[in-house]
Length: 115
Image (cartoon, rainbow, N blue to C red; front, top):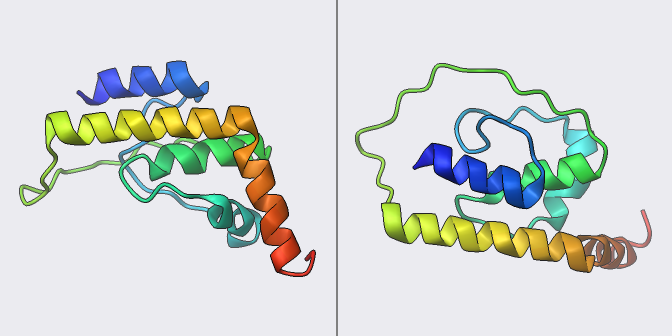
């Protein structure tokens, strides 16, 4: 399921990462704070939104493998959660194409006084 979803993500977003969902995200607070303020996804696909926006911002992104062990207590519904992630990725792609994030950034800057 993860491999198929990754292929879908790569096709829809242009991200070339082997895995966008698993692992850790280590970010430079100063460079990524504006990105986090623009984000709207709060489910499984938040990683995809973060990576797409970081790539659009021209930030250097490195992928380093980690050893990951799934928690037996973790619950993912293959059908429901896969559909929700796919829907979120389609929305991210649509937001990028329509300029949603640029407009959101502009409004956030106006709200904060242009800083």
